[in-house]
Length: 134
Image (tube, rainbow, N blue to C red; front, side):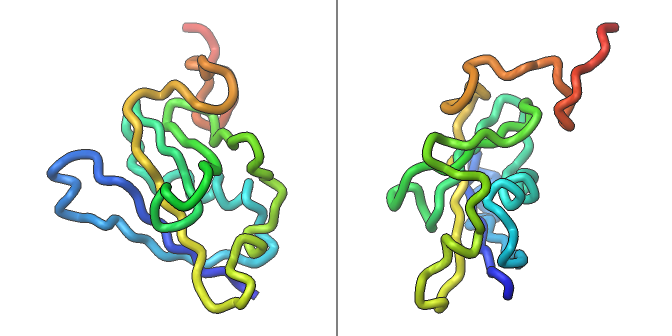
């Protein structure tokens, strides 16, 4: 069984509005965990320095609590309190099986996270390993 996912995000400037709604569709195996899913789609929002993207389940953030946040300046995604990275992605799908999963990314300027330490390690490479001093 597979899960169809639809991603969309905020526009970040007027030029970006020309390409709105920035929708992307993808399919995942039903055994995919929320943690694996977020890690795999972390490159979907624009990778801009000084940007933080907060991910919500649904077409917009009005419908629920944030799940995770992503910044290109961090080693990896940060999950919000109550979001279980071990939860199966398929368990978030509508119970009647008639519908796709939608996730929305809200843009925030600045890379200070809502979850985790207030100062992500600026010396970590994108894969999470520490850089050697020059």
